[in-house]
Amino acid sequence: MLPNVLKDKLDSIMYNIADSLNAGFALLDSDLNIIWANNRLSGILNLEFSPIGKKCSEVYKCECKDTKNCSVLQSLASGKKQAAETQLITEKGDRRYVRNISIPIRDNKDNITHVVKLSIDITEKEEKIHQLSLLRKLAELMQGTLQIDRLLHLILTCVTAGTALGFNRARLFLVDKNRNVVYGKMAVGPSSWEEANKTWSEIGNKYEKLEDLIKASEDNYRDDTPLHMITRLMAYSLTDEKEIIVSCIKNKKPILEKDAFNNPDINKNFVSMLDVNEFVFVPLVVREEVIGVICADNIYSRKPITEEHVQLLSTFANHAALAIESADAYKELAEKVMQLKDTQERLIRSERLAVIGNMAAYVAHEIRNPLVTIGGFARTILRASIQDNQIKKSAGIIVDEVGRLEKILSNIMDFSKPLESVKVISQINEILENTCSLMEPYFKNSRINLIKKFDMKVPNIIIDPTRIKQVFLNLIKNAVESMPDGGRLVIETRVENEQVKINIADTGEGMTTEILQNIFVPFFTTKVDGTGVGLSVSQKIVDDHGGHIKVKSELQGGTTFSIYLPIKNATTSMVVNKCH
Ligand code: ADP
Image (cartoon, rainbow, N blue to C red; front, side, top):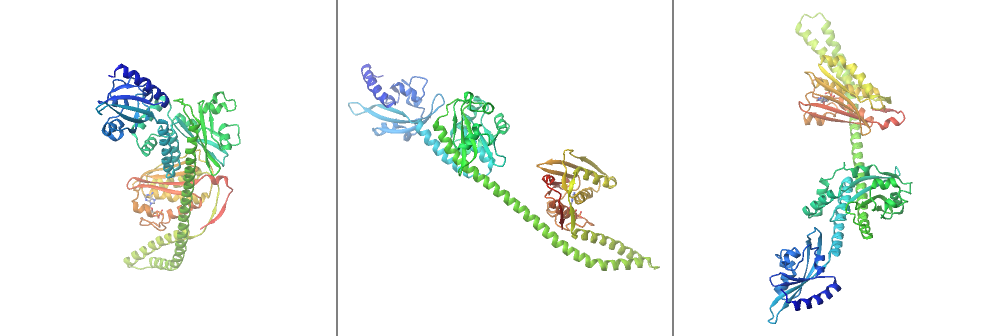
């Protein structure tokens, strides 16, 4: 221990220096025990005990293993003044950055007997550097994220992540120019202070890399939290300039509100939705246009929001807005590509159908006449008084086969004939009901158990009922034919994504992947007496109605055809068009 005289002297010198520098001081003996320290040191290290008499490592929370980061070990080894920066988690769980300067003290014989350790708190500066580098990394990550919902979630995660901007909760509002509103899109944040503490300390301890942290928060993301659901209910007209969020959009400037509960200019309804007295709004601006707003608060920690936080959030919002714009443009592009692909496929299909149709009509026409002649001769032979049974039997076979060929030919000619389409307001359930009663005897003979599940809320739509009925007949006929030993046929209607969906499901033999790939190809058939035109014609009819057909099939497990017909047609006027 230090002699009293020396201690008093040191005390007064050190206190003077310490007060002027706002630094912590400690005097260490050669065994690295702290034999003297000023009060400021306890403040900087957030200590709950006196450092005097304790080991250096115990007080500074470092392990003394790494000489490179320890100014004391370095100064003992070199005999000179040394400096090093360390990061430590204090007893109370705070992260602190400290710059330590160690100066060796020698006795008369030039041996190092003590070390003076000076500690300066650089947490604020380091945190700023850390936050800025984090923002740069976030900006890179955001620019690389093109999937819009993922990106929006990433943005809110960054606003709330302790290591990033560190707000307790964040909400994102988007501007919808078509509807002239701003609406709540997404919210991220815990529901209580305990949850906030737990989540962020868990995440902070577990994930060192920002990417990992973001992945973890994505995995834990839930869109059924009260915060998210309340945010989704929020929508404000852009003409209502009295709303604080609208004025943030109009002025394109952040708003830091410190006392919302007592501010007569803020709509009370809005404040009660936010449920917090202090919050910040930051606009998302791209090329002078506001595309949305981020709203953040510290409801649980009640940490005051400073101008500096607003600045940081604004810098972040600029990057976020650009990223949202890129993702939006990408989404639009992807949709356009899909549309183009769809149109191209439809075009190829109808082109192919037209070519095949013309060819089929030509071939059918050429074959028909000789076929009629062959059939005629065969019937004459059958009717003639010929004794030879063998000849009569053969003539009978020719008559039957010609009949079958004529049926196929008439199917093919139907297929290639241009059809007049007359679209009128119709009720799908009624058409299906009608088709089913038409086929009732057929179901009975084939031992089919028919189950109808019609949704009565299906609206009227504009279609050509005769042609759509043809589609149902084709699909139901195929379903029955796939169940030669009988089975269950379920016909279901419902509304899905602004479309009427009709499911025709059988429990029949199903299809292999190879068959499934070819079923819409004209004249593809696996049946001995099939023509292979039913599905290609059905697809063409549904295409002409702006709809589409989907198929799911499992070998020996049954097949489900789903027909989607758009409802929006119902609002357009009646159309009469010519379809090939
Ligand atoms: P066709 O019935 O004259 O063969 P389609 O174009 O209607 O012509 O059908 C093409 C092929 O699709 C059928 O031959 C059959 O292999 C297959 N297919 C269609 N519907 C079903 C179904 N419900 N179950 C199993 N296979 C089916």
